[in-house]
Image (cartoon, rainbow, N blue to C red; front, top):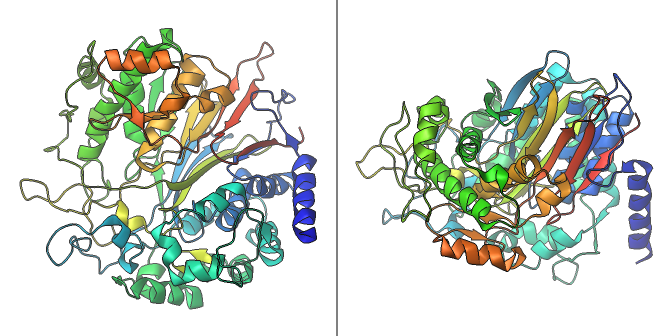
Length: 575
């Protein structure tokens, strides 16, 4: 207990060494100097990033330190063995680049790999811990690509905090401790049991010390040798071995891992109110989130507020329309044609928004945007094991990054102290449409599964950085981010209040949300309009966001927030 208390006191001292800013209350930076900040789901990860910024590191440098620490202290959400989308704002050029680190299916993957011997889709609990669920990890490769282009410090210097913490141990947080009490199938795997068990065989809990010397050794090799430490050699061989092991072993090879390449993509941008909102293109669902904003802009939701049931009704119906289109058409844009521009075309948005009547539609069906094919009923499952963080450096460059191992603790299989992703379960389990054609999100070799991860960056009318936002939450990410933007922009709530508002996820015909957190009058008003909100899909959000609020001197004020449902923090550095 003495060691636990000492570690807690040290962490508190380290975090307070930075400015832990009350959300929405950050000081105004000096003219010509950006206000550096890190917003992340864990204080230790945010502190690791801020330390890098204090050493003169760039936003990308800090992002690498944040990810390395998250992989250790928040293993249920993201990690070295997973994938990510990184949206990068370059202050000098005022341009946005997308680094796609989404996992890929191995060359031996087949479209029927998630069907059982009877031809029916596998049960998710069976598929999620299978070897065939793991895709080739992409987060490290994407960060390495971004570092080559935007790094300021040596790659080898960015892992020190995570190495020390893994070696010395960290105190299990309440959130991680809570997940260790839930009977997730991953916790039944031998690797997870060995990692989280006490000497007496019981699982550790919040407040216990957890050490991970295997991860410390791997990070030392990653620091010294770069991404090759993951994409070749002993670690790659272990990934192949663990992913090919029973039950339901996969087909990954060393060649699959060595062949992985991140993709630098153009952002998809669309106006919303006074902002230009930019998102990753498919396989991300960022364009669908832009579609949602376009629908909402055609309503009077901005004249409503958090206690007006009509505002929530408009959000719910617009969400149902958006999800119908997203679920029908989105997949990996390198393999299938996704009607992104058609969904954002003004006339199409007008037609879809006109479907929002005085009462909820009986069923929300996909539309027919230009460039679309036949819409299909979606067969994709997407759990909520993800994390989002935002970094800005002193030069004004920004990283908005959503990162994941997919389901809670990925597959539950570990290599060198980190969990392997189960990202391939983001593909449609049933690969065929009703007409026998392949579904847009069917499995294929080298393909990237559809993702709801949507790290956004907002620009003002001059092209300057105006904000960033993203969330965890699987399919619900689009609803979580959409609600937060409406609350912060349309309803002008301080960011922390905007993120704390109850969540409402209207995907399909059964809208769900944090029923107990809503004003009873809102619940009643929704019911009068044909929406009977039921509990569910609200507690797993992990929204982190920032807006640069205008000030009289024109320099702007940082209004940052973290999702109170997690363990986040907003840290700012010296100005």
